[in-house]
Length: 286
Ligand SMILES: [Zn+2]
Image (cartoon, helix red, strand yellow):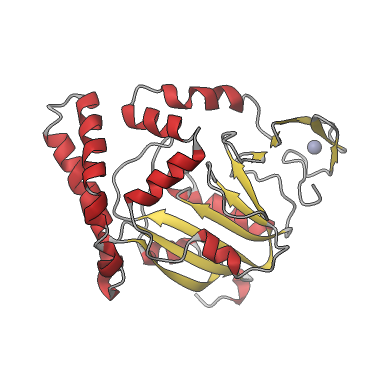
């Protein structure tokens, strides 16, 4: 509560049993099932998440309502080579305040606050990533996994992270590189390691590299290519094959335990990660 503020006027918030109220502008934000809703009407959109006319979106939306199963299948699909968010927070002090922005259903640790646009199970702050309801310099670390490709202005999101972070605060960012279009609800960008470094130039790099390796990239692309070939231009057939080839590629992806660790793996990695420390941008030599 101490770190939160009113995203509209930056006023302090007061805690009431079923809502918080801004002491400055008087606006109220509902508390429901342990989550504060800084944006309204998110429950209906969450309920409709699995109802879109897309098999993959439907399966994903429904699975996200069963977090354990969803995370198990996600872990099964592609081996993780680089440092995970759980390993990242292990290096922080135990009372560090950490935000996981665009968390979905992921549970990283007790001191991690899940922030998302949708009230997934485990989300405690339902808010817009462009307008985080956290005070300037109040947070020790920010995690954002597979969030930036889904926003139209990633630079604005990063500027928001810099704002809420304390001096010397850390970011843990994951973005896809060689990966097909995936709507959640839309998909705009991809980054190379150099591109991600450039995007995060307000942070001193502590670690960066391959998170998901090249085999996972190739099987995902090939799977979707085959799905396109056998779809006969029928969307539902494409989606069936895409899910089928995704399942078939699980044992092949295990090759990444070796391939993903090679020096050149980053050239065609499926996903990359970046850990950086907030610096004063004026100190940075360009
Ligand atoms: Zn206010």
